[in-house]
Image 1: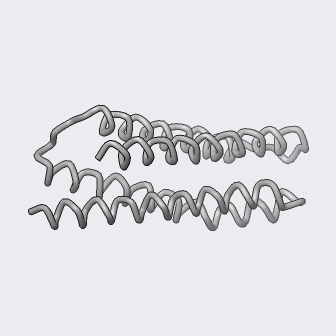
Image 2: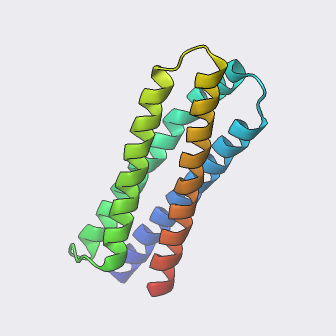
Length: 136
């Protein structure tokens, strides 16, 4: 049973690391691309992988919780809140992207929002992972 808990936790961590890599890639693209058309095409290619990894984190988290008989601790609640926050702000960003106008002001406003969102996602993931893996 302990092996299953350890394997599930390691798989959960692998998906978290993969999400950190995708966030770093998004931040790199947001800060490096000059034209918004190139940027939008690249972001549209990365977005499905980003949300697939988020769903994998959710799924592996449920597996870890089931193995641990759904015991809730502070770190579990923090992880749930962070995951919901990442998904909620991702939905908001996607809606903003879909309503984007072809003006420079609208595009730069989206870019600023996306940089803030991914930076906060990265910070929240690192802090939450540090909290969880130092406590356990």
